[in-house]
Image 1 (cartoon, rainbow, N blue to C red):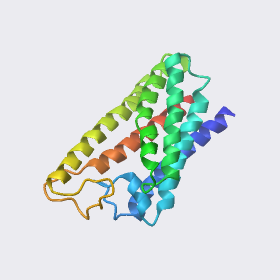
Image 2 (tube, rainbow, N blue to C red):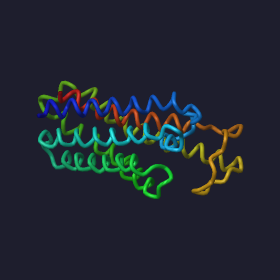
Image 3 (cartoon, rainbow, N blue to C red):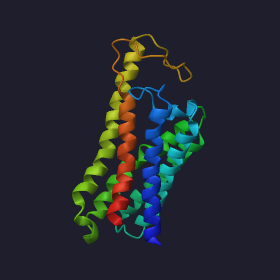
Image 4 (spheres, rainbow, N blue to C red):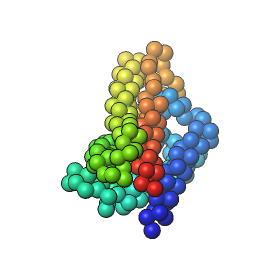
Length: 211
């Protein structure tokens, strides 16, 4: 049973990333340097971004199930609960796209919870005999989650500040500009993709080590 769940978790994680990668070819109008992943829902291939979020959430849930009996500390258990919270946000991201009022809640549930979960779970796992030999890759992938979150926050702040200085409206329902104004450093899209990649790779790494 565990082997089947592990294979499902690996499959959903890898396929979710393939869905995301394919969007860069099917929807090239969304420049990856500064357009967010969620904006693919506004394109013609919105089904792919929905599949990405749902498969990502499924991978998180499957990993939480696999880890439930592996975790040995209270903090590790809290980490698994936070992983499930993040999974709810990921699934909500697929069910409620960028135009839906619940998309912001999906972000709040899905994004901040995962780095905390990754650290709590990883530091518990590396104390166990079956996991300790993979300590380096587990910790590297876990720490990459919070680092990517910080990088995205910085990149978003720099880009939004540049847009404001360029005179672009920053209201919630303001239209998306056709291009980045001259002089604006817009790398938030890359940071957003790095975040998602690091989040999903942590899931895949932990499933792979367990397997």
